[in-house]
Length: 292
Image (cartoon, rainbow, N blue to C red; front, side):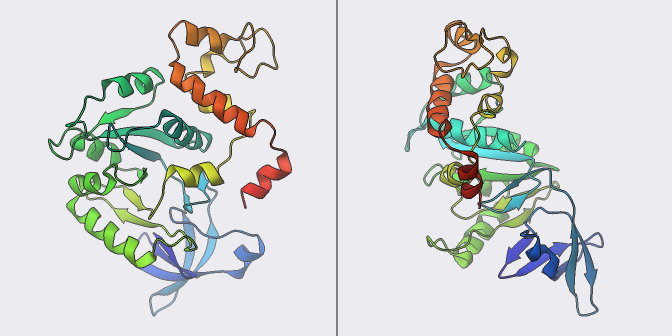
């Protein structure tokens, strides 16, 4: 549930939370328990315990350190601040690369219609939820989507993450504010995570300062994997004239043809090309170095 200062707080089958240390063997393996890990613990009479085993993860993020996530809610405002489709697409691609379902949440829809943005991402097959903390639009849908899942919210400051979480569950915003202050937001502060239980079942990860910059910096995607992180490209992969097609500018590219035919939004392909150019010359050893 929480990792803090070498202590790990584990919610057990009996409903109790145990303060645990991790066995030294994990350090030797270069592995640390993350919030969201499923673990086996041994317990003492005083309520403390020791993490004995970590089950295989279906996914994990380095910054913030969280494992076994089901969903990533990417919160952007329709204005104030204006959305960047490149930042949205980089964040979606990072989630896709990890097998985490991305959900685009467009806030402040009481200020401006979000139809143009929804059109781009619904065409791509990305769930899109317009929300307003003023009118309450979308809040019930978000609440339903959170049930039974391990989710996190990401978005830059000013987009209304805390306000939205407060509408979803009034306890969350209070707890998030308190925890984030306690953990600190300094540049050199280790990013901690706490899973907050939801009344309908499921958990939301409190991730102080978690923005798309974290994903972009720590979750680099290889150029070979990048096309698969744009789910609307997938039906056209393997249909290109050249097997080595990069889907950026080649003749006979099925992805480019789909863009021209209006099946793929131009902004999505532009983001792909930008991301491809950023990683095309990165070597394998550099990818490993970046992931440390």
